[in-house]
Image (cartoon, rainbow, N blue to C red; front, side, top):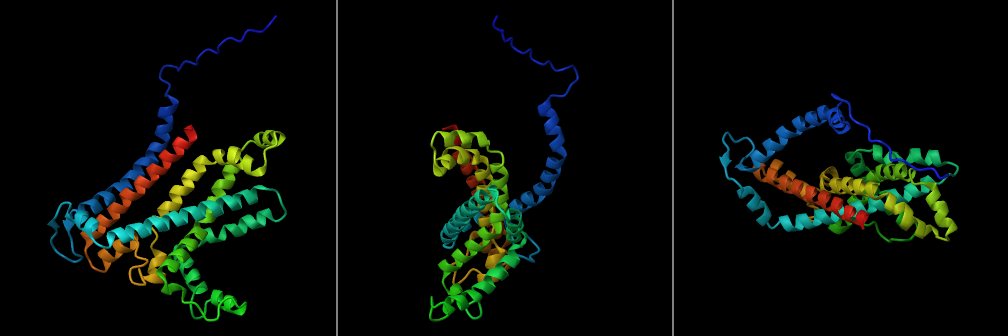
Length: 306
């Protein structure tokens, strides 16, 4: 006699019992309220500043409405600074994803010295951007930098190279340094996600004759979509908001070759003393960062549903 599977009765919520969703929101509500309280005032105040003509030290503010935003968007510096910022954030994101995922795949295997390598990998992440800039400034120094010394010793170059004299080279150096700083965090996130991939899927694919690349493309990578989203947003956000390396290494130069939106906003507010335009620049950056985060979430969501 064959067994008949009966549908399981739905569990009824007792009278007065709080739904799980409401209970969950209640747990995060205090932290959310504190975060909103801490962010609401500075965000609102800075937006109010962006609607005024404000000079540092002036006694009176003059209402200008959206004129600061019009001036920013029509400024000759805006488009080049925006393009540099987008390219810089893209380079940082791509390198961070590639290096982080590569190290995570390496550390996911069991080999001697894996724990030591994990500990060493954390060191770049522990450095602040100030220390990062000082370190890379010393490595690429045109007079006494060890990189020039090694290249000349091995006959790669005849004379010391002035790395910071070319804006494109400097942008590459800063992007490499920031990605080196973010890669350990990306590695840890990818490694934790790799630990959750069912080994049975890889074994079944191996029995079916799938090679390493095919298993990675069909099993591992789809399993890491959410982690890719998180790392992409974090890396892009850090690329957009980079400041310390520019302040320490280039000052926006040579010329304006390394003037990103973050540096332009700083110069406008704290060197030219136009706080209203500076606030408008940073609000434009906020909108761009939010748009990139939403676009990335949408694109990965579509790829997941496909």
